[in-house]
Image 1 (spheres, rainbow, N blue to C red):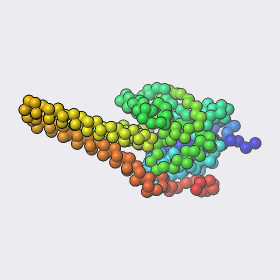
Image 2: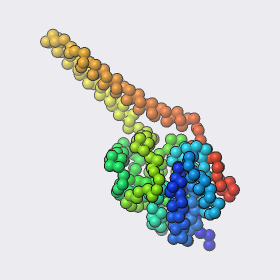
Image 3: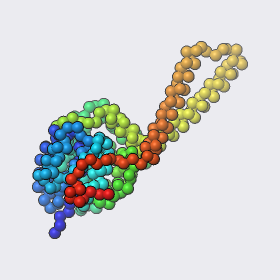
Image 4: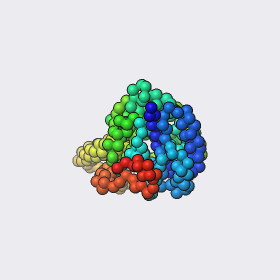
Length: 319
């Protein structure tokens, strides 16, 4: 009887320190899940170190290892999309190479989708041990904000570590937009998802590629991609300023006509002008961000460009 296939999609960017450790964990997990045809699909996101060379060595020795390498760094979102597009298994799972996504959870995730009727099994951290406090604070604020301004639910502490069925994967691939925010996309497509909680695990080696400002930029991508609330906020701010300006105008006119009091000096006027200018620039900036995303979408550029792969050798690369 043919075994059901499970493909682990692993985006990699400068992960030469952790790849040997990850591969050892992969082999251990494959031994535990002997009833499945477990494979690993590395997506090299234009790494500048020996990541690709190590992946090549693994692929030469182990037929369960597949890979695709980008022509440059296109980002993790592009790597996730490429993995889902090219991995053809009964089940596919997304996970990081740094082992912050425990492979030990795979049996529980497989049970959820095979026996409990779920379309995907996702993971979320219940603690942020080892993470800088300020980063944890802003992360929680982001999840609270997103769930208030967007109709798409995003679980607090959600990881990209997720196992999904073919049906779920196909739905994800139908959303082929250039500006991608996977956490939002996973929630937007719906389907039944089981959330599996675990305590935070620190990187086993190497350094994180996500700085505070990269995470801030990524969070803005999510807000713009899955909510129009900032546009509404800009409109409300403009209307509020107009109402306040009208009220002050009436007060100044009454004060001048009744008491003959001249208008106050230039410092207060300067502050008002600067405040109004700042509000105008903020609203223009919000409009510009939405317009820039629309502009990039209309270009219809490819999400990634492949420079090397071992899928062609096996006749597995997808159109």
